[in-house]
Length: 223
Ligand code: SF4
Ligand code: SF4
Ligand code: SF4
Image (cartoon, rainbow, N blue to C red; front, side, top):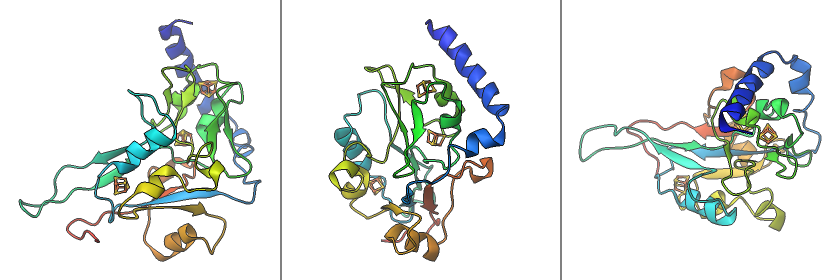
């Protein structure tokens, strides 16, 4: 299939999404595993070191030229030498109502029943790019080697399988990342969300992202 044809089909996928009945989206978004993993990125703790980006690449063998996770630095805030930056985590939000799952024609893009994690089965992926166009956060890409869709899977197939935390969480030197079961009120991540002011990016789109953020407060960076 030519690249231009792929792009045309990808565009058609977005139109198809717009016309989907709500039940088609909801049916694939129910939590049926008892565990619903989510994450908090505390922007008041993040120093933009990008150790998380490197750890992700190493743990998940992410190819050069593509990335599952990036940290976006804001413009400087304040006057020298008292300059601060806001660091924004750019990665999959693991939406409970994931449009990338709803548009996938083969079932390759799916919601894992045991964890609530949105993932991709490369064996079923035909590289049509519907999911890439449907994702409002632009976090998916075509893997340059496998030619299938790829993105953050919260290390489901690597670290979680070994009973560990996602690589980005383990490596973060300031403990800016917290990961765990959102449906367990006693989990660290649930307590953090209950006790802190948090926000979710593009919440108004109704996809119910599971990546929460403690907002950076200008001029008040917590050490
Ligand atoms: S490793 Fe932690 S402090 Fe460093 S950029 Fe990532 S989230 Fe921020
Ligand atoms: S952020 Fe994008 S890729 Fe991730 S679950 Fe949501 S729509 Fe899918
Ligand atoms: S690129 Fe793969 S995962 Fe994405 S919609 Fe097409 S078949 Fe599904």
